[in-house]
Length: 215
Image (cartoon, rainbow, N blue to C red; front, side, top):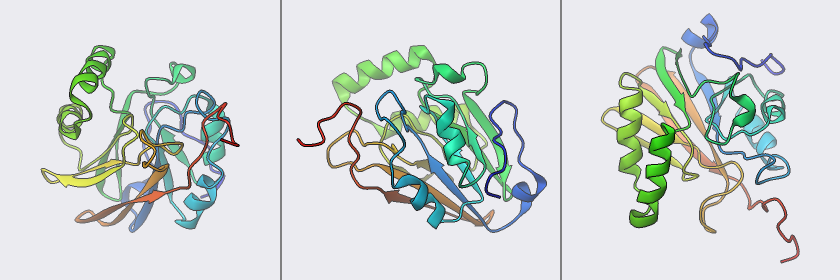
């Protein structure tokens, strides 16, 4: 399926093949931040994604420029949503998508919620630090019927089951929020609608835009 055109605009529905065929391998990336934080995609990202031969790539937002999606599409078809820094996509990408893959309902979003919620999060993070539970409850409210909920925003990788749903945050494909958080991406394997697995895969450290490479 390499080289298939992107599906950047809402609404999007997967082909009958993707909606029903099993098994499926779905790669998930988020928070690539090109070029606001990184000059280009992580040099190891495309080869690493290709190793898993994904049927589809999901991007959970903070893409920043269309060229990122075009580059990812050289590996597999890409479906994406907007993040809080995706001004370039305000007329083309939705905040959230929900669709069926391999008989499984998947919700895809960045996870920052409304702008009011985004600002409140900044305050809560300042005083209380990161709390996964805060995001889980928000995501459940936004996608109450989804079996798999894919999100980004926090730059913290998560692959866990909660209340019978799979929550997957692939982390940032550029950088983590702490020095010991490596760049990462995720892979979802759907064997059957009852057999779903998600894994996190780390990449080597990657310098931010303008960083001193000799430091």
